[in-house]
Length: 128
Image 1 (cartoon, one colour):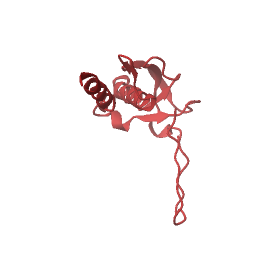
Image 2: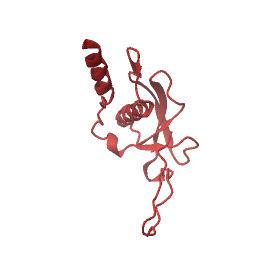
Image 3: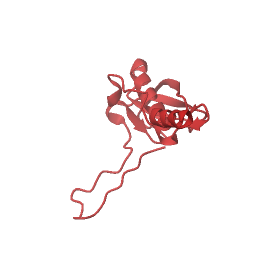
Image 4: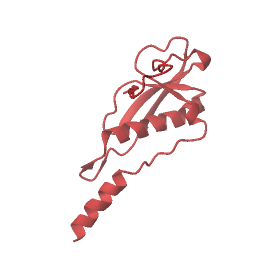
């Protein structure tokens, strides 16, 4: 009876988001990999989260999301308004470049259609 309770607890805890967005971090944009024309590099940040709990591997998408949130939280301290992943996450850690782009920030997505056809779907990249 005790083993199912431990498994349930581990699974329910792994579904939680442990990283909250700091004030000012919501305005920080995330660039997809590539050049950042018109942006001034302000530095780099290394962030890390738990990628596993005992024998249980956490959801990769959730780990990536938390790493990005941590990097966005660090950007204002560098007077940066944009971040860009320098490499994929490894063992729960990831390195990001921080830029100050202002109004020069490159677009990361194509503009949405003005009037999508009725019953059609739109897709947007999630980055990574």
